[in-house]
Length: 446
Image 1 (cartoon, rainbow, N blue to C red):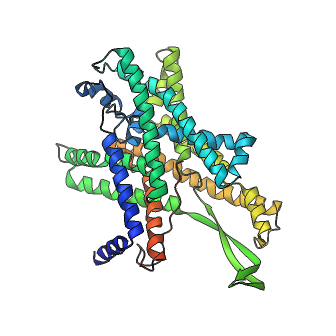
Image 2 (cartoon, rainbow, N blue to C red):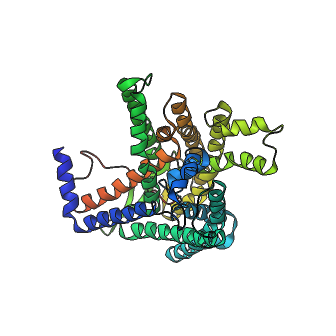
Image 3 (cartoon, helix red, strand yellow):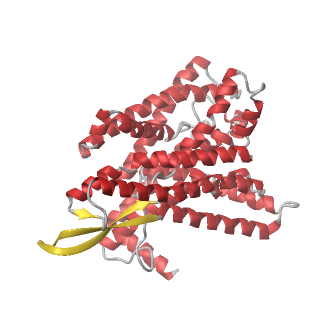
């Protein structure tokens, strides 16, 4: 406790770091307040059915990412998700469109161009999603106090403006605050539902045949173990040794000296993207069948399987998709040919491997081997909430036992702590850890 107080004092003593943390907390507070501002013209007493619908399934995931704004019919109901979708589209276009690939290689100027394209695409995606959200509100018989045509127009404008505002908040946190703004907005939305889910689970355990305090302590212990496993997955790397025949030190070239470094290849280079892709794919069959009117015919078993998130069939398909998408997204994120070319240009080499193409093939082989256990581990974490539900954990609390929510929280917390650690060490203060350095990873906005 004494060390914790001392660390907080050190953080507060660094004016720049203190200002960044206060700014970040202030902008996050604004985002949370905005999540509770209801769309103009809606009677809040009629939102019970929408909130019930948003407690599970895809809508439950969207509601978790927006911190309950989706179920509250808030001005930030669509949250930052359209921006994430736009970022994914830009990343995928970078594989197939030469002009996008060129901008990705142009450095800072190219990054600014891509950011501007992402912002414009975010507005387009939000404008396309907003009518669907409003149509869902109308189907839930939400009471409105204005003419329907006026409600549609004003709500679409407000929802688009809300997403643009959330995007602006995230960018301001990234530029002026601490941590990655977009990721922090998502994490805050996820954590917002944790206290309520925790209390519901605690109360349920003290009800008749609930299991009592002992079972609740066992559940918390299991949750801590899962968090530790998620941290291990996020930070796990395979260090490939690299040697340089000539390195510069103190302005002089050290001829013939062998300076050894490492290329850190992440076991989970794809982050949470495989889970997000897999979840999107899992809802396609139900959507297609419902619109085609076949959900009650011969395909009813398919609807039943993809609707039961605790079922064996659903989780088996879900896990297989995650493994496949992990390999796919890793191939997008990690360019072994570029790594080999950069290594050759800087005069480095992997011991026992020829520079150039053999190095790229070696790195690709290593990456493929470590991606397999990483993808299986990721799939196991993704399906853990289903096992928690089967063990009589309430649905809201079970979501924190794995999946996208847990991995996002772990990754964002590690990244933010890493930045704070850097500030402390650069000002000659002790870091957050008693010994060693905090090994974090940079978490981008997907």
